[in-house]
Length: 291
Picture (cartoon, rainbow, N blue to C red):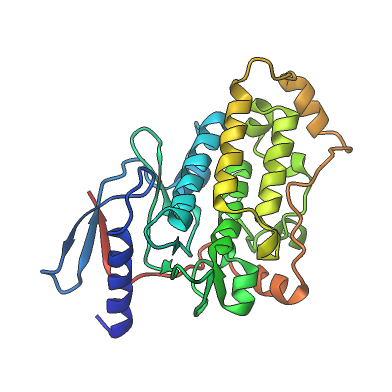
């Protein structure tokens, strides 16, 4: 291992030993006996959220999706504000959210994460992460703060609800910028199971997460609270539930009242992001095992 690899290994080890949260994957042990050190994590049998979005016939209802999203948001909120030292994950994406036997979300892969000193709100770093999920402000400035995770989570949330990969070369420029109307990009099952009011609220939350200026985005605590409220919204019997047919009809009309999110990214950022496929990501040289 070279010096960078050793630094990444130590960084992840330092971070995960400070974390204790039901929605963060647990470290079981470290192995230094092999040539390449290993971090051994708990076994998470249902794999990545990415797999359930893109590679299998998803059985996840809208209620399941909102619960999983709320759990992942709660884990990030914990990292930002409840850990002994604030932690920015820096590589939030659907392949780093795992699902256990009960489909409970587990945040994973802290190789790119950064500890933030208590007297600071941001740190300057070399830009690192997965390009399709990367905060454009962080990409431009190298200034990393907790709102960078919020942006990345917004991309994951949109991906989860639309079933589409973010910013793919195979789609048109309009689709890559995700400027379609709500009815054009939500998964049919999501449209069928949600009410119009609920889907508009979800769309507004995603839109807020994806504001280009980090100061305009909500905190992860606010995102988690909003998602929990959306879950409760479905359960309250006094909520005026429109029929699936009526909601779908309204969403499919030409007068659908809201975009999911329109990214006001300038040409310099938009051009750069449009050049990368979903597979562009940071890789980590040491081995990680899940048992």
